Length: 119
Image 1 (spheres, rainbow, N blue to C red):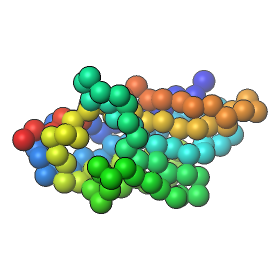
Image 2: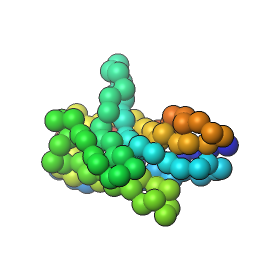
Image 3: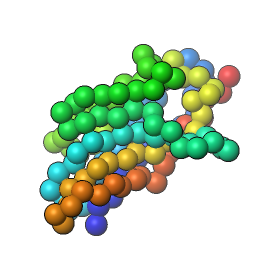
């Protein structure tokens, strides 16, 4: 059973910073691409940052220059450093990972962590 467990969300004032973590556990062969998504009330889930197994990254324009995704393969963990936070960054943030297990690649989601940015 593969699990993704997120931590690091919370309440912060506009202009502040937060760091999210997501650790994968269980039995698997490898972790391929990993990413962070967010979903605000009444809106669709959207990609925030993505990192490949080769450490290539991509971000939407809305967070480029403010958010940084990184990974520690030895710890099976992906991080999201969020700086210069804005009220519009308020959402539930979800970790996603493509993991090879039982001979196939599957997508897994974390349970989500709330990020609230006050103005």
